[in-house]
Image (cartoon, rainbow, N blue to C red; front, top):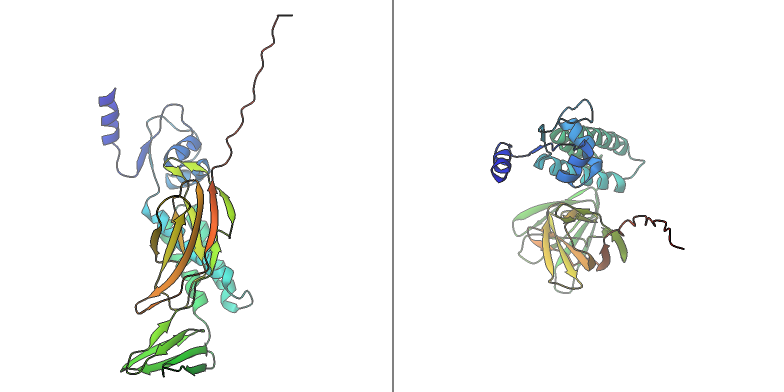
Length: 291
């Protein structure tokens, strides 16, 4: 029996699963992907005509392209949600986002990621604005320049830096302009929010932590402190993270990072991760002939 199982596993290519006897598509999705609702993804990916499966059939599983597409969609959703709904770019970006969602649900992950990226890029393509700036000189003689609107070129130490959309740079005497990053604003989970997280094959499903993007930020750094356990510092290239967490309470904050700058930490927020309550099975009481 063990030899048979070993041979069966060796016959599977990476990213494949074999259907077991009596197993439905929903059950395969739950066993391999941790969620019965993802049966439609398996159906589309494997071009299945129905839900009936033949034991021994080999099915493809979603790979790394799915995760990349999912992150691109999250970024596009955040960008569209934060954009001005009255702007002409908003409608175009929303249409692209809907197209990306449709591609994703049809298992066309690479196209979905590309279309989602196109959605937020359209929001970044804004018409030229008149240039307005503010200049403040502190007691040490350092100059802080802020782009109120339009693009502003700032020179210092033989280096030119272009800023826009409310970004600021600080210029110290004889030094190159240094970007002043804004403080990220946490969006999810909400402060003191209690999250009911479903279990999956590796534990509990990951918790999504997100914040508003900061102008000029190249990456972010999230600090997560559990009530019991060690503090964790996690890098992020996008304004979000998917973090596997055990049940318990947590506090977190986030900083924006650039090549030559590091923002202040955001206001610290707390949340709780809890498993959903177990389903109570009905109790059957057998009648007795005793009187």
